[in-house]
Length: 116
Image (tube, rainbow, N blue to C red; front, side, top):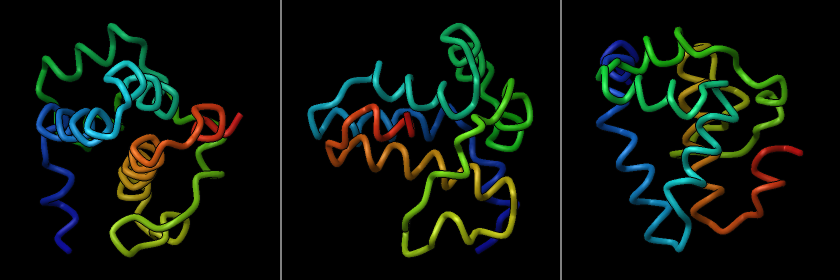
């Protein structure tokens, strides 16, 4: 996989897919926003600004206020890859977000998704 190519994807292009995946399974856009903000530390306004600016994934995570301290507790498989075994730090953050949205879409309780 060409990681540089993945890192250049626009977050604003991926975000609607996260929302669509969750809403098709009965979850809400607000819940998607909650998990994104939990992981990255963005405020609602900050998240909206990143989407409006059209930043790529590298910039989205580089400008994130903070990665949640419990992010390392996110484990499991996304696209056949164990998120805890991903070597590249940026790719691991992307996979963390993918995993959170997967859990949301699968109906997992928000408290468990947010590792409370």
